[in-house]
Length: 297
Image 1 (cartoon, helix red, strand yellow):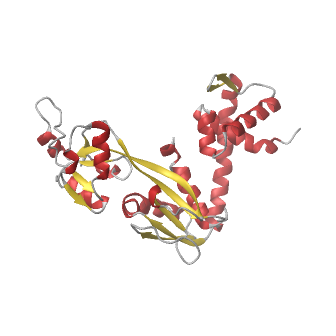
Image 2 (tube, rainbow, N blue to C red):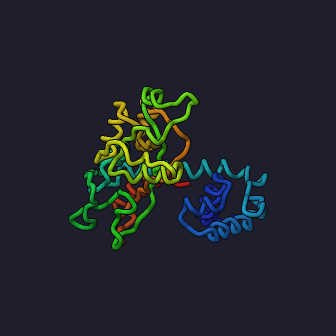
Image 3 (cartoon, rainbow, N blue to C red):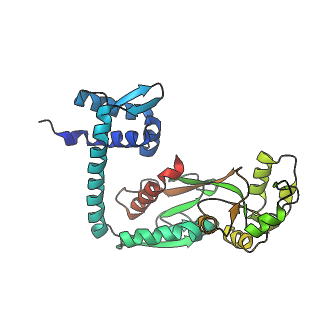
């Protein structure tokens, strides 16, 4: 019988496309073009002698044979992943220096590094918060995780990590104090909490309250962590999000006041160009990207 494993890459493409019910989303996750996805699927269908997907213009869904195949392929690929990670936990080693934006470092990244190092104890990570990214390369940082706008413009390979989409939030007490009788908020007079300048609130007002100059008011903190603490202490309304403010939102310390959002920033990961895929930094980068892939869809 023909060796099935020679189609392993195509089977991986099939699993991703089937999971998303989308060739376009599969291309995004695997970082290849739509045509590459289509070609792999066509090759599989020719090999199996049956259609695995039913095409509806730009939309796809699994055929009956595709639905039968999907759970078995997904299970098999997970077995390969588990086996590989079990060995990597024993063998992968190294030390890397990560330069990261301070709020991200303290509110999100530190916990992920702790989780990663518990899985791969032979890899040591030195996390260095820095408002201005460190130099990258030998003798400096091995990886930068920072705002896309602050990334080096040359000598690095950049990957999007996730975006931060902000929405107004405050303590329940502040919410109750600023709600008008008609349960609406007077955005001309809402007390705001800013972090690192007033530009982000300005963007939200420009998109949703363009006639108001309310964004000019409020106290400015130099760091998001300080701004979150101030909002939790009842100093005003902050532009919160579901990633960096997750603990405060889930605990009810901060509650969402408005469904309207604004794109605050993209976080990116940078490695020096030419970094080997076997390097500890590349391994950590791929681990982070795998665990945040849903944030990029």
